[in-house]
Image (cartoon, rainbow, N blue to C red; front, side, top):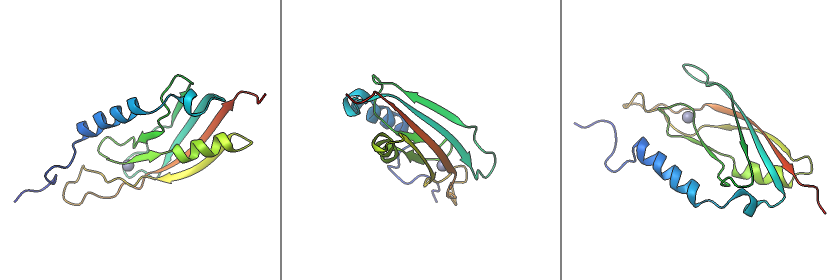
Length: 134
Ligand SMILES: [Zn+2]
């Protein structure tokens, strides 16, 4: 009997090269949001089962790719946090600042038989620094 990966299921390596391809295919930030000078992501995590991942912060500048999908910080999890909707909301909001919580929908592969759901919670603060309108 064969346990573990279903035939054709992507490995983590496939996933990270797919991630890179998606990233390279994304438009530049300045093409998508011409008024944005900087996008700042502050990410904190809660509810980790074994250990809670350390906070992260990311800053994107206009020449960067407008790609807002962050992989779950657990190495054995296949989940991603999609922040594209939050980026649009932050750019459109007059305060240019959005906070929110997302839950990881991935599963942890450390236990192949049960693949427990990850459910790590991400609390994000997203700030868009915009050029003054003129
Ligand atoms: Zn996860």
